[in-house]
Amino acid sequence: MSMTYRDLFSGLAFLIIGAITAWMGKDFYDDAAYVPLGAGSLMSLFALPLIWRSSRRLLVGSPGGQAVATALVDHPGRFLATLGCCLVYYVTLPHIGFYTTSAVFVLVLAAVLGERRPKVVVGITVVFITLLYGLFAMVLRRPLPVEFFLAS
Image (cartoon, rainbow, N blue to C red; front, side):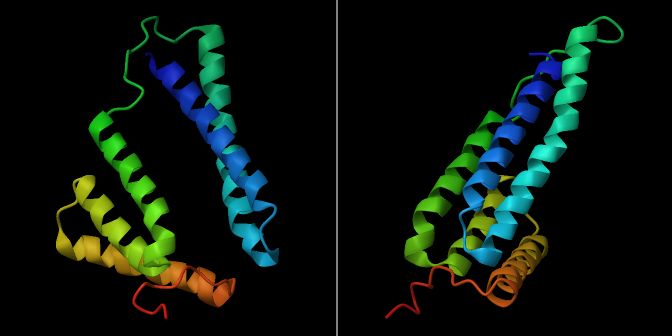
């Protein structure tokens, strides 16, 4: 598959995912709707130049003649492992709790993607969980799934 087709498919996928995210987020409670609406809108907006550029290349023809063949996914194993981690995260989140599941998700995903420096992985996890706490608990004031060890 040429790079142009890959860019076109990626752009279309981001446009569709962004539009669905924004559409689903519009029904969230007051302030909580800003996150999916904003993220989905930005994702869709940033996908448009990629779609435009790849469509233009397809219609005009590739500059320099020969198209370079590339795979749609560079590392299928890592892609499937990431997808699996996301599915496990989605299924376990309501049962284990938001912060615990998110912390374990970041730690496991970092290992799956090849990051082996403990200080970097722990640092990223702490910053990520702190930002999530700040956004949902302090700014949006929205309850998240309770941690399994705090549930009564």
